[in-house]
Image (tube, rainbow, N blue to C red; front, top):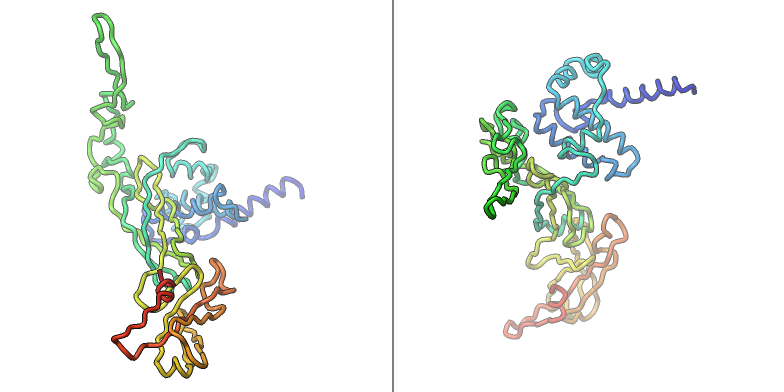
Length: 360
C-alpha cells in the first residue's frame, strides 16, 4: 500500500476511535459535573497509563481517555460535542492540534517533565473486616471514604478568581527573603528565610474562594467497590491508588485496605486455606454413629457420616471442601469437621485441648 494511502487509513482509524461516545469512554453520565469528569479521568488515566499497564491496547485506551477528557473538561468543546457530536467538534477544531495525552497526564498530576519527582501525600491503611462467607465465595462490597479533594471552583488556588492572585511584593514572588545581618563593624552576613508575608508561597490572595474559604480543598465522600476474590488470604492488602487526601502541594497518596474475616463465636473458622467446623452430637450418636448434613458457606450441603464410636475431639477431614486457591475457583483445599460427644454430666465438663488448639 502506498504511504499516502496508509497514512489516510491510519487517520481513518483514529477518526473511528474518537467517534465513540466520550461519556461512555469516561464511564460517566451526560449530566456529569466537572468534578465527576476530573475524577473519572484521574482514575482511568492511572489505570491505562502505558508505564503501568502493559496489556495490549492499553495505550490506545489511554489516548481515548485523554481525548475524552480534553473535550469534556472544556465548556466550549463540551457544548459543541453535546449539540453536534464529533463532526461538529472536528469542524470547530479544524487546523488545531490535539493535546499530547502524556503531557496532559503530567500536567494533571502536578506538571513537569517525566523525570521530575512529585511529592507524595500521606496515605492510609485500614483494617477491613468482612464475613468469612464473602472470602470463601467472593463478593463486591460497597464502602465510602471521607477525604479532602481540590476545590472545583478555584481548582486548588484558594482564590475567588485568577485576578485575585497577586505576586507577593515582599519577596517578589520567590517566597524567599534575603536577610542581611551585621557580624562586625563593616562585616555583614547574608542568609535566606521564608517570606513572612506570603508564607513562602510567593503569592498573595486578595479575595478568598467562597466555596472553600481559601482552604483550597473541600470535604468529599467517595463511593468505592471492594472486590473480594474467592480464597483471598487473611491480611491481603488491596490498594486504591491516589484516593487519599488531595492537595495542590502533593500528589494524592494511596488508600490501602487490609482484608480479614470477622471473628465470630462458634460456626465456621479459618486456618490458612482450610476451614473448620465444630459439630455437637448426642450421646447416642457418639456411641452408635451418625449421619448428618452440614450446610457450607455457599449453601451447598456436605454429608457428615460415621459408624461406631466417636471419641471426644475426633477430627474428620473432608477433602476438597476448603478455600479455593487465591484467584482460582477450583482445586479446593481441605476442610475439617470436628465431632465430639456432649457429656451428659454437667458436673464433669469435657475439656478438649486439641480442639482448642485448632482455633488459636
